[in-house]
Image 1 (cartoon, one colour):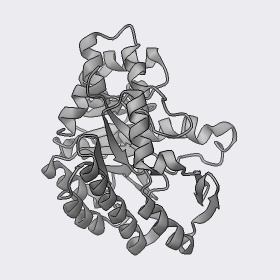
Image 2 (cartoon, rainbow, N blue to C red):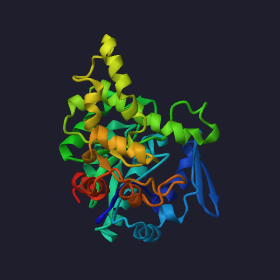
Image 3 (cartoon, one colour):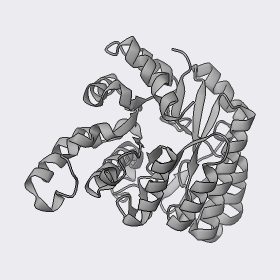
Image 4 (tube, rainbow, N blue to C red):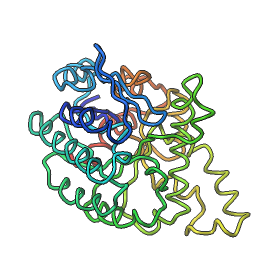
Length: 328
């Protein structure tokens, strides 16, 4: 497969980490320097150590070469910046976005950026979106599946969706703080179960909250192969059929399955096959979750090695769909 694009590839630029470590503790962040890289904690969320593979672009490009990946769409991961208040939150986002532009200028054929926005302050998010959209290499925006206590159906976020739609920039989602943290602390379940259910909750809010109806041109990409959403969409529809208060969207919930795009990170050949059957190969994009512990080490091979997918489907998932969406 040629020109592979990884749309789910996390990055912590050093200036972002420097600002995080210098000013984050005043906002409740616990920062610890280790030999393997910095480790940080906010609430129950522990991130790191953020070692060279997360930070150093030379190490990243070497890993991409080894994996057969041509392009990374760089995205910030946990803890994002909503917890940091207006001023620091804005500066963290702007720092990340500026560094994405610098990374793109260094390797314009290989690195593009997904801008992070201070959505906890929607007025600042709009300001930063307008600025970031003009930066070289910015090809989309990145957001959590919930913004602190604000769900994605909150109408305060609608101006941001309108601006994204107008700019033609896709919105990529990713969990940060997950539902049911208390019950999921053991056995790594905050990741293994919390993350996929966060994707389903976000999708449900975008459907029932009228976001997808209001902004028909807005492209939304769900992580982790859509999480639980594709597999509970029928249950959402049953609720829509039987409960009058759920008739807030123009169509049955399963009709929105093809309004989303999905990455390929499902950790199962059968799941990927069924996702393609459900939404079509044209809605699926290759991802790896680089470079967290359960990330795919060989994201291209995960797709190309699936014997039930056609060659055309494989090429679309590995490269073509992302190149079209990100205007590469």
